[in-house]
Image (cartoon, rainbow, N blue to C red; front, side, top):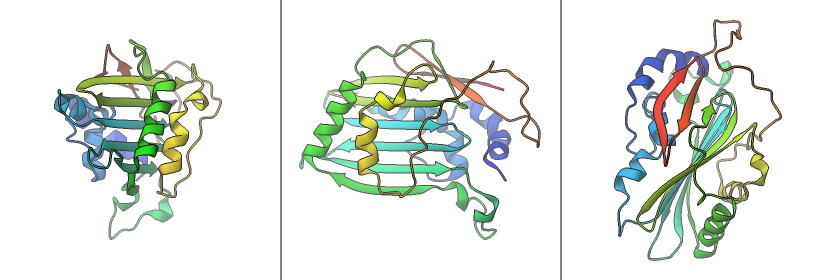
Length: 230
């Protein structure tokens, strides 16, 4: 089963908009809560004065090829942070084990501790990338494009921002190198390529029927979790 077939089978469930409790390891559960996870809804719901700082970085390296999720939680004792990396590539047929049919979609996971200097460097890189600026309200994030979405609870305040290529140069986001330096999953970063995007509701065929694509829309300070499907 390809990623596009799996997404197609679960598209109705996605429309329901299940709320993510955080990262979900089960591939089906992850798919059903993906939009909520990208929008950082769990971070928003728990963000209040006195709550520990948290950050979530989600990369869409075109959904059909690779997605990456980084969850970072401040450690008030060490002044560092707990760093969790999850990377999901498009699996090949030879990687599917019939004893665990969904295993190929479980991706790679890594957890480690960042020291105070590493945490500070990540926060500074995030700020220098324009995270604290207003989000591009109204922009659609397309699953067939490259984009980063970052949500955070900092000092009891929730904020979300997003960057998409084409339209913006993702290589200028300095926080990306900080994340990749800390990443120990062993899966290479699917770097953005120059692509031309046609109308979203086109008629491209993948040889097995129409490819399912989706898009999210950036809101005032979050995402509209009412995706439009192709």
